[in-house]
Amino acid sequence: MTDKPKLRVGHLKITDHLILGVSKERDTFDTFDLETVSFLGWNQVSAAMMSGEIDISFVLAPTAMDLYKAGVKSKLILFAHKTGSVLIKNKAANIGSLDDLKGKMIAIPYQLSVHHMLLHQLLTEKGLEPGPGKDVGLEVMAPSQMPQAIQLDDEGEIGGFIVAEPFGSQAIIEGYGEQFFLSKDLWPKHPCCVVVVKDEIVEKYPDAVQEFTNSLVGSGNFVQQDVDATTKIGSQFLGQSEDVVKKVLTEPTDRVMTNELLPVVDDLSKIQDYMCDTMNVLKGKIDLDKFVDTRFAKEAGAV
Image 1 (tube, rainbow, N blue to C red):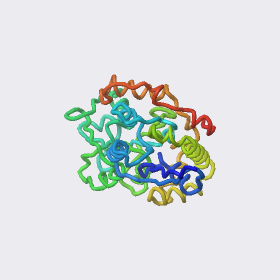
Image 2 (cartoon, helix red, strand yellow):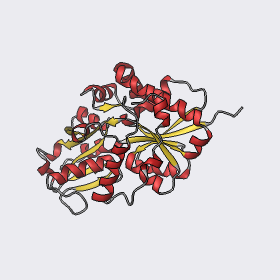
Image 3 (tube, one colour):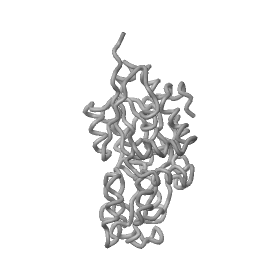
Image 4 (cartoon, rainbow, N blue to C red):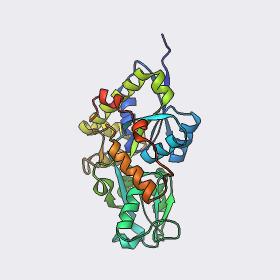
């Protein structure tokens, strides 16, 4: 009998990855041992996937594509969530409309992020050009650092930030940020973070991958159904107050969605095409049909 493998799963402390915290808290596993590894920023997650420090990552969809293109042999097995991000304006910057962002800087979590894509679409549709030396400056910043950045920006040089929850709700509750746009209103039911597993794990431990997927899909349904229990788990897993977590889960209830996790190749293709052809930040395309493996999600009953 084969020893149970230890699966090391990398993540950030964001509600996009909350199903992992719920699975860790609620489930026990027969075919593997679960170790979660939290990181501060996306560059650390990428480096950990490339170095082999982690076997599985909850990671931004375009970053996952880039890692695959760079030679990280892996499969995208599940969406981690849909929607769940927010564009926050800095109260000190006195932003009334998108036009007021001209000459300001916006913090983004990573170049290869759906946040960057959504912001680019929003600004360019308004006739504003984002980028160095352009109408709206962009600065990559770890999500957890964004609330403090605007809190300390008395001059209002930072127009705001776009990020995964709960950091937007944290800035709102603490009083120095205001909601500008919810990502779900920019692209309804958009994907953002995905669950990626190294090929060697998929090949060697398919039963473990299936059990993990089953758990995540079940946790996604649990998040939608039991807000109070999820709020308590989320507060511990994310290191946030229960007030912040509850706001994310309830205002509105579809601020972040965790009950539709079946990977949709057409949505991923939309991201890849825009970020490669329009933004030119993804350097070349991958064969998404080879990268995406839906069998585990389908077996788990994901929709």
